Length: 120
Image 1 (spheres, rainbow, N blue to C red):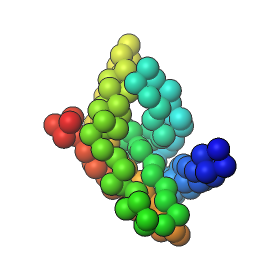
Image 2 (cartoon, rainbow, N blue to C red):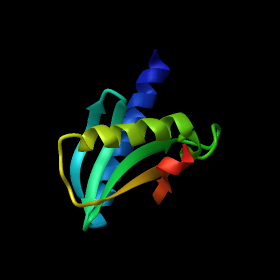
Image 3 (cartoon, helix red, strand yellow):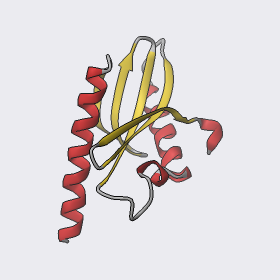
Image 4 (cartoon, one colour):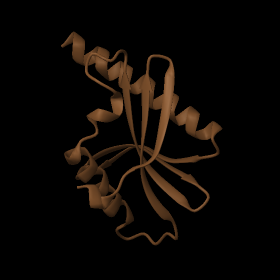
C-alpha cells in the first residue's frame, strides 16, 4: 500500500508541474483530472485554436523505461474516447490534439501530437 501512495503523490506532483509548464507556455488550463466513463484525462488545455488532451507521466528513474513508453494503445483509446465524450453536446471550433508530458528526474518533455485516432 505504501508504494501505491508514493506513486500517487509522484503523479499528483507531476500533474501540477505539467500544468504550470503549460501555463508558462501560453496554454489555458480548461480541465484537470477530467473524469469520463472512459477514464480520467489528466489535463485539457487550450492554446489558440488547439485543444490538447494531455496525459502526464512522471517517473523518478528509468527502471521502468521512459515515461511516455507507458502510454500504450489502451491508454490512447481511452483518451480518444474521453475526448469524444467531452465534445458530446458541445460545439467548439478547435483542433483536437493528444499530447504527452513526461517528467523524469528534474526534466520535462512535452510531446505534442503524441498520438492520434489512427494509432489505435
